Length: 339
Image (cartoon, rainbow, N blue to C red; front, side, top):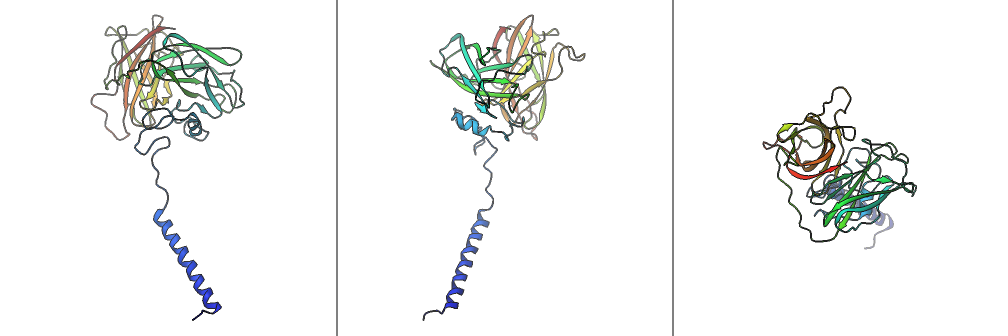
């Protein structure tokens, strides 16, 4: 029997209520999306900023998107070097493919937010820009100081073995939205030829000798908080107490996260001439690791006019974890070079 108009309206209203109620039920069942992990990491906990879950490079534009202002690193809290561009600044290599060899020329520019090459920088550790190069298996570490011409082009040279490399530009721009703030940009560099990745050394307290020099680590790197690391320098087993000043300190430390080569900002405690900091054997640094896991640290020290690099692998623990009984540092010889 056909329903009259009021009955049809009542039935239609009931249908709407039933549909809306079902939608509410689905919404309550779904709820707020569950986070899949920290920003810049995959669901399995492996870092993905600038790299896929297998550690290989991803698209540079995706890097730039992840490093826009408002992220941890833009606020000075996160690691650097994962992005080729940040806050409008972009690292542009003259060539992203170079032949292997010694003293291979490398040119690059830093493009500012206005689209022009940056020509004004503020000194950081006595230099306008620090260029770090390392192969992706964390061998071949080099820390050099390029020269800048009037057009904003930087020039340097590197010793390159075949393999995949990462190049970092660590600087303080003198103009633009990040003027006066430390910034680290990174870009991949490809060197053709036979490539056999070197396994990362296991944790240990003391580095292997480099021309008789060693660094012994005291302190534990703890994720998410500032950690005090002290490295004591010895030569042929004897403490070195007359280190040369180098870059406004008695040592310069770079820390890179294993897996994605995230670049940590590490600060020396004290400086030459402050009345309290001694020229060895102990050099103290403050470092903050953004996550637990392994990091490779590279310590540059200068003695008798020669800079030598001592490398160790440090394991950052979770804040509630007990220190490892074997310590946190591992050996690996690198190089010595006059500066």
